[in-house]
Image (cartoon, rainbow, N blue to C red; front, side, top):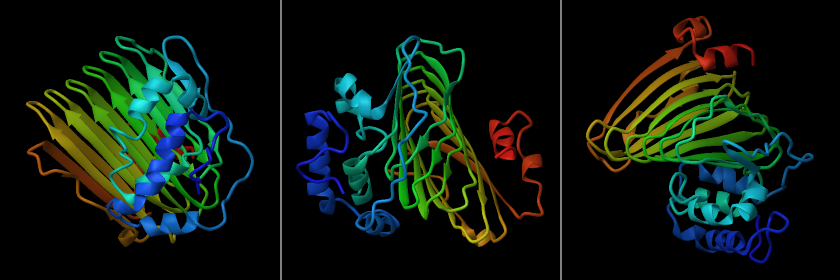
Length: 314
């Protein structure tokens, strides 16, 4: 656990130390989150660690990339304003506050306004911590594809957060198929979208452990769209949970969710219905297919699906 007088990273800026401390102090005042005791209880016990994280990227040019531990100092102003404020909010619940106080790795990516990144950004680190976190900021009018295939080797309870902050009119394709090795995992992929932005999410999960997936986007304004294609395969004896929530409202603003779930025991696929968090009249639709091992999952997916190609070779 992060102490009140200590940082997790060397040369951690004062604003982050204070933010971690505040999260620790206020944690008990926030609402409880579903299943949080499985994580909080595990974090109070032995801390699992096995070596150093590898594969995080440094890049200067059409976009900026840094390990998050480095970016909190080098890009302090932008992260002080955005880290766990707009997409994954640290004040939304006790587990989120605990995650902020323990963030121990991850990636920072920044795409400036009006920038087209022609080659997909490949993010494929091996992360050893319990609380990795990505912050991805895409400026107004920019276009980018990011493909994340991280290996999470921690043997305990892992909370992996990815938050995307997408500027007005930007077009973002975000593809993720992370693999977890520990006793349980929570993968949050949360987005804040400014007016007129479009996000296409492809999310795959087939780790041989219990995984809870939280998908969220706040669609802020007119002509904003979010679409997610999700493939979840449950290994024998594991529970796979999916909680999709959208918020926001605007003329021509839409949310679409397509889910393919496969497990030997369909009761182990616990998929919540797509809903709005605040009851706003957002145009949302979903289609969910639950398949047994005898069904051909990959025949159900679009031929050009990134998930089809990625999971078939996992």
